Image 1 (cartoon, rainbow, N blue to C red):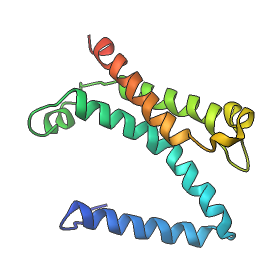
Image 2 (tube, rainbow, N blue to C red; image 1 turned 135 degrees about the vertical axis):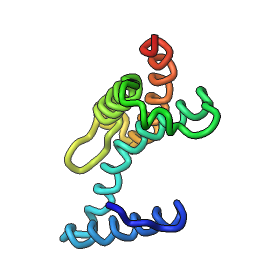
Image 3 (tube, rainbow, N blue to C red; image 1 turned 180 degrees about the vertical axis):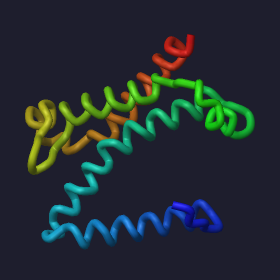
Length: 135
């Protein structure tokens, strides 16, 4: 968008305030804010799993600027791991008012473990898929 802020922390604060403002403006019933935040966590967990695996297992010296410039670089392991982990974790562990996953329904004491399972599963899938798909 071309907005320049001095630090990553300032960008995070501005994005957080804007997102929360939009959420409150759109939501008519504030009790659904919890559901909104859970749905947001459903994709951020698998995304975080892929990013953590990439940073912890394959430490690249310097910045990944070369990968941003190289338009021929393809890393299909990330999207595959993230999508698979999101679908599996939602199907099994989601515990929302609109949908309850299979394991969450069978064991109500579990609660909503979608974020945790999605993060761990995406980490594991990416760790296995990246070396195989890079060949």
